[in-house]
Length: 249
Length: 249
DNA sequence: CGGAAGCTTGAATATGCTCAACACGGGTGG
DNA sequence: CCACCCGTGTTGAGCATATTCAAGCTTCCG
Image 1 (cartoon, rainbow over the protein chains, first blue to last red):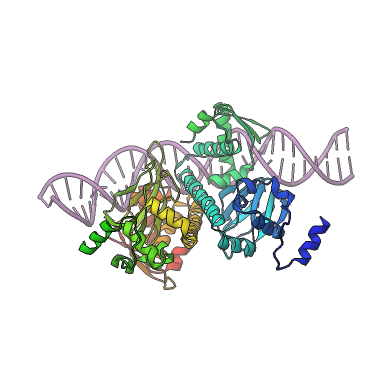
Image 2: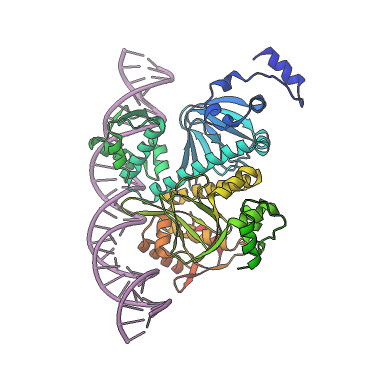
């Protein structure tokens, strides 16, 4: 930690500080480019950063649990976050995946209605609820950007409802692979893609409303059909993305 | 139509009009109470009303179709709107229901990604896209209210994903009935509720990711179990809402 | 009254689930 | 170093749930 920063932070409580420096961490942060921080001016960014904390979470770690009181929000800066809901008897459904630089947390919520877990190793930038909400109230551009993300998430959720409600097991698995493939490589006019699955078979099953056995069988089926190749159970090669898309129903 | 209004509208193009009267239709409109219009000041409301048109749609009428260019938004002021998506081979999934005073239309969207149909007879207040977007840009409170509705819709969509992915046919049908029952009668600490189904069996099936036959069978099952009573295929009586809730899984 | 649309019911079928066995890989400890 | 174990994934056999196909029944409306 920087000595000057420590001094300033102590001396400046409740005072405006001019010309504080932009935190180094923010400079290369995706949230600054395409995420919520992209609409903040320098002062706001410094103010927000002053209250934020970078945290790294191991795969499988729980980030937010259902019914938990919400005290902070976060930006996802690395890795994949899994949003899920569980029924009383333990049945689980993954209701969304979040990637960098998505905003994490139910804005204006008092307590969470979902669980959030690190699907892979994840890096978060945690921000206190109150600071974010104050900033949202003062900066319509921030409100606007969060509105846009929320609208995008709603579009994705509805798209996925079609998959859950109306597709066969094979189509579901193909749809999942297509989702990951296009998310990893935005320049997918190229026909072939290679990637590592960010989810276990169990997570994929919970995402697709299937069992792990069915997911496994459909992977095998897509493999024997030549649509995909798999190495080490995790590493996937899609030779022709259009063929995969055609398998999505 | 009022003669004075006609004259004013013609004479005042591109001029500010002071002291225009609040449209009568707005006074009793639910959107003015709990919907988007609740955050508008009088001038804004008059301005918006000047560009808006009330329309009534018969049950089954298409309001917005997939891939259609978006030129207007709307507030639902009466009835139930069904949002759906279809796969190329015709399989259909209902991805949401909207009631008064919900906002209808994909904000900032260039073209629609879903169909919207009148499930029952529906009344809409149509507003031009450009006017709404200008007002959203100028009034953060409006942006905030639309953000809140979008967040609520996202919550609902995710809740429904659990139903689609992880519940049995019986639980799905019970969940649908519970959704309608609690939506019709917000004061549902009372144990019994009576209502008319706003959707046909086909629509319900598309909402639940089932076939009409399965929906029908589960209705029969809930009826013989004494959870519900049905009259005329449409009129439903729930004697004990807690029993229905227990059937939701 | 007759026809159409919407709904229910039954029998046969198929899709995905359950239960069970086994394979593979990485880490731990004798 | 090898044996063992645990977590993860695959495969098979039998089964259950929801679908399909087909018939018949209400209700609404001309």
